[in-house]
Image 1 (cartoon, rainbow, N blue to C red):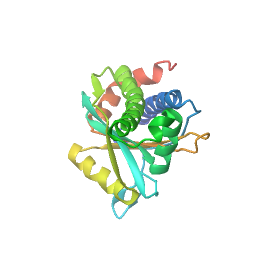
Image 2 (image 1 turned 90 degrees about the horizontal axis):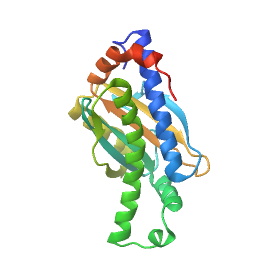
Image 3 (image 1 turned 180 degrees about the vertical axis):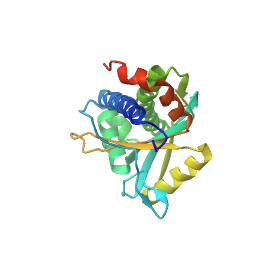
Length: 209
């Protein structure tokens, strides 16, 4: 992914992305009230039958929360949970009467809870990209897509082709108390790498708080 970057530019890119993802972990921890850690960050993804393995989940149903980037950098990200993980985070974040009731109103509340999580987590990374690279970017309203785990990687690959994405990376968070490991997949256009080239030294010398 970083073939066209110098060693220092790669270091700057990794520094910025890891910092943004650490902020995303803190946002997830804030909304769920449970310790959340960034346990994996991969910029090289395995391929099976020429399909990048964006997601490693194998459970039957998988929930993808998508945020599209708009502005100086184009792309998208998916915050991914299994069906079981969705139930676990809803159990800690929603009132019992909402969890135990199935009608249009409670279904909307459950959806809004998930999209608000995605909005906060994706927004944490987007904010750091904007701040460090002096960009005007924001995330569109998140959308939820539910599909079989076996369909996820081909689905994201098709999206990547539409966006002409050249940059891809995956983070995995761990929430030990809930036994939940969300996966956070990003695909960005090549303009992101050009911005990193222009701002690498600034990123490397800037203090991270």
